[in-house]
Length: 327
Image (cartoon, rainbow, N blue to C red; front, side, top):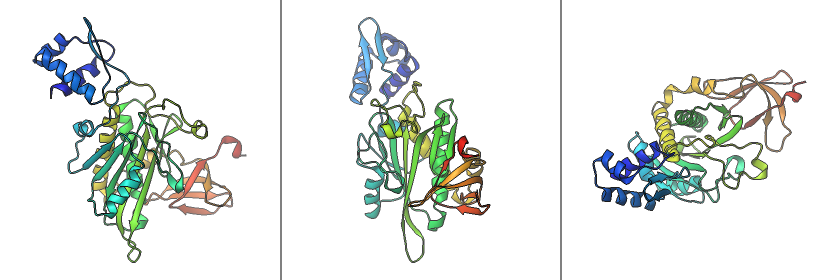
């Protein structure tokens, strides 16, 4: 389409204006067609500056999240995408759809959540224009105890997708947080509906929230020493659409090979906790000091407590202890 070709050219020349005549010449269309395409892009939400005798320039702040934009970069077929400017919670809304019989592969993507949820009932800060918040419905034939592998492959998918778009290194803090430059940039919340008699999973919802930019109002006080953005101020064309597509492509690729656990070594290599002193965090209990030793084949964390006890953690949370705690 003419507007997609123009959008690509504007991104390629993001630091300067491109005249309508130049765009028309390079695309082999009329200047009227160029102008119509520019107006269509504005209608889609792209901020384009147009100056007489200079031409058109795409604002660096243009990062429109749309279904067509995600699909343009998506290689995986069979996914049912629904993209929203704002939603209460992608996990909550998708859970309702799952209960009504929605099929596997339904994916909700939003540019803002007004009631985003994290683990253990926490809220998940999801402001507009600075991240993507997405949930995908899966219906695997698996036992509930094996569901951790879904979270693990989602973590690898996110880390790889981030690194495919910028020269950064993404690490994984067991079991579901992604860090870049020492800051948390992504959280993953996997929720399941179970058959209590068989222990089989009826469905899983994998919720992924990624901070792509620092929010205009910055982060709330309680997050300022923890949260960060995956891409800083790096100008990346169609960032959120490309990132959403990249995550989905990698997640579904790994999901199709779930039994092989082909991402295990990649997950282990990216671990931020192995070999580190950690605190085991359990609800209603004081943090317990331990050392993170290894991961087993089911992505459980093997730790050694201060008492010398080897323990296998297949759920819960840990935090990395500071150096002064090691003495």
